[in-house]
Length: 275
Image (cartoon, rainbow, N blue to C red; front, side, top):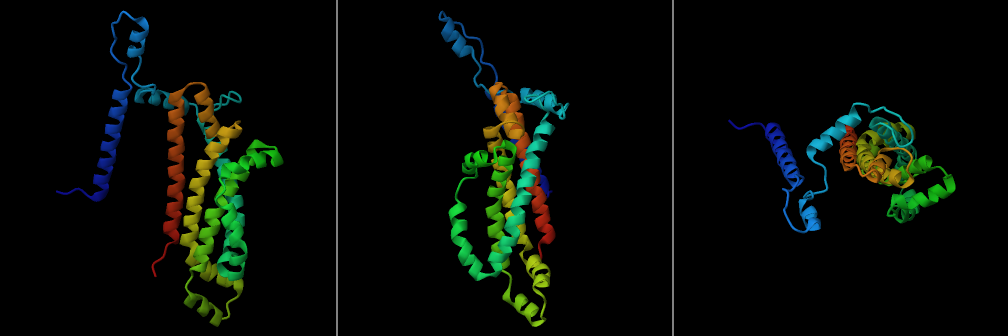
């Protein structure tokens, strides 16, 4: 009997995980003791095959962090939930500020050829600039590392939302707009009842891309400015030479990024429609 596709996919994923963990465990096993007349040579050969911690050590570090996630012992001693909360707060705030600018501006660019021609050169000029390249200017003008991180998140979240919104609005079928014009529908009602439902899937795609980029950038920004956040946690644990905590933080970052992406994917399915 052939198993369903989801079951086979799940079994395949578990098999890949088992193989990966097995290879990791073997690669981090200590080498057997070496007898040699040269102590330095023996010590070098007897060292670990890899400087990485074992999967068991990662599990121990994860348990140590997860059993007290809201611990707050000072600047460099905060639980993983507190650090994650700071990062999420910055990402959501920067994303919301970007949406306040990108969505109305995207509607304007998508519905007005004149606005598109006028704004497109500036968009194409600013879009390729790395978000982190704005950090020195933000720190100099704002003089607050946390607010500067929010500003950088807003910058990197702005362009995918703006471009996708403009594309979605500009791609609405002319027949639908002609019907609205024939019925003498007001501009506001046409925007909310005709254009927005038709462009919503594309807009949500832009938001999904923006969220992924924002989550990437906030980790790097927090490494630069320090203080709080999951990026600072990674950098601080690296300075403490705790690779187990660093790898655990990487798993947390990946898990949270996946959950954010799944959330927008679910929203995208809710607004999708069949013509």
